[in-house]
Image (tube, rainbow, N blue to C red; front, top):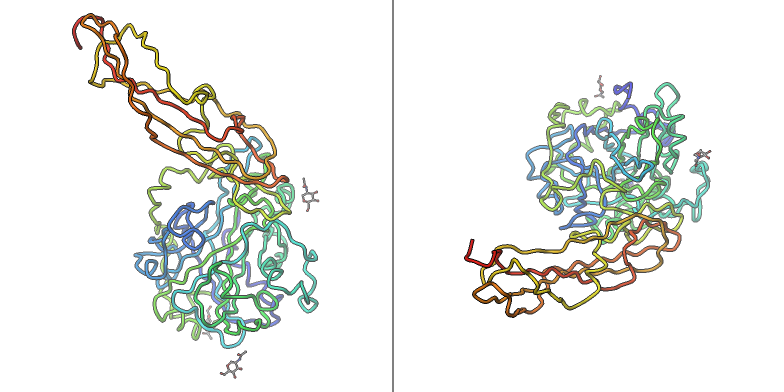
Length: 495
Ligand SMILES: *[C@@H]1O[C@H](CO)[C@@H](O)[C@H](O)[C@H]1NC(C)=O
Ligand SMILES: *[C@@H]1O[C@H](CO)[C@@H](O)[C@H](O)[C@H]1NC(C)=O
Ligand SMILES: *[C@@H]1O[C@H](CO)[C@@H](O)[C@H](O)[C@H]1NC(C)=O
């Protein structure tokens, strides 16, 4: 990146193109990234999210975030200290030719525009949250490029169409005229990015700004809001007449850093097309501040410094604010990942809808596969020809078999559901010996299940899946660990 000074100019130059008139707004910089993690308190509350997000906002962000917990924070990674809202979106990865991935550098954090478009704009109500975009989308069936907004009608002005037109991938070259915001609704391929976008690519997403006036959230986190007729502006559909602040995120990724490397760019959710880009928001402004700002922060400069409602902190302080990654995800490297995206998500090019979530390898936290020999029999036969064994009931060492199969990734096609269960069982074997240490008999205890790992992955036939050459046919693999309770000795005495 040559000119970081230019980072802020994105949307401003394009306002006129969209609305014809300058309308009030402010541009909230979030120079710090509070974290990069598989967290999404809206889509996956209380658990890990299936893909990685770049997260901006307060240090209390977690898998259970709500307005109250966000407001309880001690800092935010954004410029205005009274704003404890959470802003997040999937991260961009570069996938090398060998399938390994690394996260692309995010330049300058992100910008959250608060656009006061439309009449009688109101602040978000308490506890308001929403999602923009659809993570499983992999196609765009409307005319490219967008016809003039005055020509949008019928299907092309449906909420489904508006939602996809709310995404933008702006090719950055600060030596040239800026592209319009939301002008391109797909992620350009690497060749195009290398040749044209020397300052990277800016991901843009517009949130719906027409609200039903009642619900602060909905099951899909979208149905309580709708887009106005031209995405950014225009009229609200029936039932969604309350105009809230229009939120617009901009995030720059330094794709140009990979210009000399072979590979492709993929969004963390397994989307190389861009159509599945999305973003999330939970309102966490301190009580009353957003309401005041909507009334008073109307300087057309858009600078947060030009509105005295806001308390501004330094960029250094924004960068200091980080949330704690939960224990469950502590050891996960989300900066680089071998053999695929973090969490081994399948990369799906579409155009089919990429649902449900698919993985390149069976999800197993224990082992990538099991020994085919160990899986062959359900009962254990333990040899008693153990010359070194002396008695008895004290357990000194145990032996366990380790999986001998090594996964070799191959490309194959999977249709439908593949379920694999890996069951680890344990059985105690006691070897009885005489005074000379000669084995007399063995006593075996019952089989005990010590761990069960189940995984299901589903894929459609058009999808390429990297699967290990594991014995995938078998529904149940049993992998036995014979824990032999014994004591080593040489026929006389004890150690
Ligand atoms: C905005 O509010 C005014 C005054 O309450 C009202 O007359 C007008 O119809 C409102 N505009 C819209 C678009 O709702
Ligand atoms: C990359 O995109 C450009 C422009 O859209 C297109 O002309 C080119 O064929 C694409 N290249 C590949 C390898 O898909
Ligand atoms: C808007 O901000 C500029 C500084 O960027 C300032 O000079 C100007 O007076 C402000 N305008 C209003 C109406 O407050």
